[in-house]
Length: 304
Picture 1 (cartoon, helix red, strand yellow):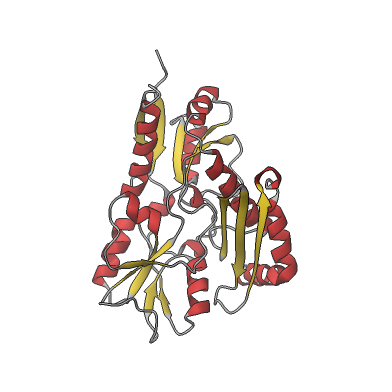
Picture 2 (cartoon, rainbow, N blue to C red):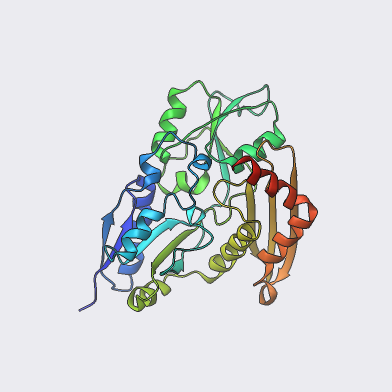
C-alpha cells in the first residue's frame, strides 16, 4: 500500500487552492495524499509591512518547522515567497508549470488611476518602487492580508486602486473586471510559480513530486532566484527578475530599485538554454557593476 503523503498548507483560499492542485496532480499518478492546515506568522500579523518584519520566509518558516518535525511530508508554496536559501534539511521537490507572472492593478472608478496623484495600495516594496519611478506623485498605502481580505480592504477604502499578482487572483477566480495587467512592471523572482518542498532525506516524497516537475519553469525560476541571491536580496528588497524561454534561448531581464523609485540598475540578456545555468549569477554581477551595489548598500544601511 502506498504511503499517504501529508501536504502542509497555509489556510488562505489561495494556499489551499495550490495545495489541492498538488493533491489532484498526485492522484493522477495514484499517489494518495491529505491536506494538513498550518497557520503561519505571516498570516497572523496583518498590520506590519512585510519589509519591517525583518524575516525572510515569513510565509514559509512555519511550514518548514512542520516539515522538519515530520508533521507533514511536503509543503506547497508560492515560489516567490520562498527564501533564496532553503532551511537546512529541506529540499526542492518540484516546481509546477508557471501561471501568469504579471502584476495587476485593480482599480475603482471607470478608468485606471494612472495620473493626477492617485492613492495606490500595496505591501510590496518592489511594486512600490517601480510604481513611484513611473508615477512619482502617487501616494502609496500599505495593504496586507490574504487575497480575499486585500480585495475587501480596497473595496472599503478611499484608495484609487491596489496592485496584486495576477496569478493569485486568477487561480481562485477573483480577478475583478476593473483590472489591468501592468506590462511595464517587472515581477518578483519566481512570481506565478508554485514550489513543492520536502525533507532532504525523504526519498519517497522526492520521487513522487518529481513526477510533477516542469523543467522549463524550474530552470527559469532558478535563474531568477540566483539573480535575487546574487544581489543579496529578499522579500524586503525592490529586486525584480523574469526569465522566459523563446526559440531555444533564455531571455532574462532584471533590476534593482531604490525604495523611492528614483534610482535603479538593470540588465537584459539572451543565452542559449544549454549555457543558461549561470545566467542569474552573471546578470546579478552586471547589475552590481552598473550601480546596483550602491543601491543595495543604501538599502542595507536604511534597514539597520
